[in-house]
Amino acid sequence: MRTPVTDLHCDTALEIQTGADLTSGNPEGHVDLERLDRGAVTLQVFASYVSSALPKGRAFRAAMDLLDGVEAACASSRGALVKVETAAEADRALLRGAKTAAFLAVENGHAIEESLTNLERLRLRGVRYMTLTHARNLPWAASSGEERCDFEGLAPFGEKVVAAMNEMGMIVDVSHVHETTLRDVTRLSRRPFIASHSDASALCPCARNLTDDQIRVIAGHGGLVGINFYPGFLDAAYAERQNAELGDLFATLEQVEREHLDDPVRKAEASRGLARTMRERMAKVRPPLDRIVDHVEHVVRLVGDDFVAFGSDFDGVPDLPEGVPDCAAFPAILDRMRERGLSEASIAKIAGANFRRVLESNP
Image (cartoon, rainbow, N blue to C red; front, side, top):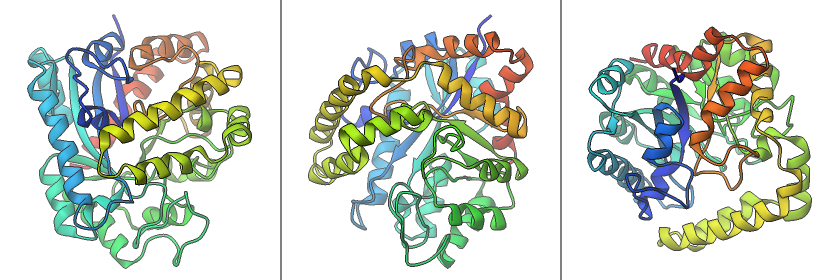
């Protein structure tokens, strides 16, 4: 019997926005219904990424449009993909024949346009977590993507956001945030929070990853870390080669985003072109699937097996490890975890039970 898998983060909403049909297949991307089924992904969180380049008045609408797209994909799936908001709803959907339960998330608090009313509207749409920042500082939260900010951590409005999310049962996601923002979330949050798609800085030092102390803080608060599958966050040699060969790739991708802000299709085409170039030039240093397991094991050794999960970032990254072409690779990842000595009980926690606990702690 296959072990069911929960994935805390994919950016497939952007693929849907540019015309991908998850029912008939999505060859340009990492996720579609057939591959979710092959990967035994019974719970997938679909993140709606909102660019910080979008001006006020458009960011919230962009989030709602992406959520509309995921809901439309569910509606056209003939019951294979079902939007849910709770673990109990996911259980019922799967018992009724669904292949995958879809949870909604928003990536980048820029989406709420400094409005708690907009935050509440997202929760009413079924959004279960929000990543506070992306790669740029917000007026109310500092990001790990920038070295400087006019303030540290959370500004007063950011503190209100965390309190409101706790109150309405929306999980706080600290992937992408600055260390001072994580510090403030730890001080303020009354509920477990997550880093939905982050890796261990001890294995791959970069601002985007989490130090051991930060991982301990998240675990101490009852949260979890979703391991990101991007080689540039998994492997130091890959990250060094990427910087030497391609410079700041993500700054380049951000420039593409700005140039095609009003044309998602052109933006997707340009981003795929950059990703193809990157995969060709980075092939010799691409890490194996084992590097994902290295990060899982690091977190387990550090804080135990209750505080780690998967947060692949499928359809949001330009490259993946060898042996991980798409979401159908999860059984191979779990098999490697078994080969390296992780018990079935630990694997069951990492593959799904840990996120269920956090969901139930944020009703």
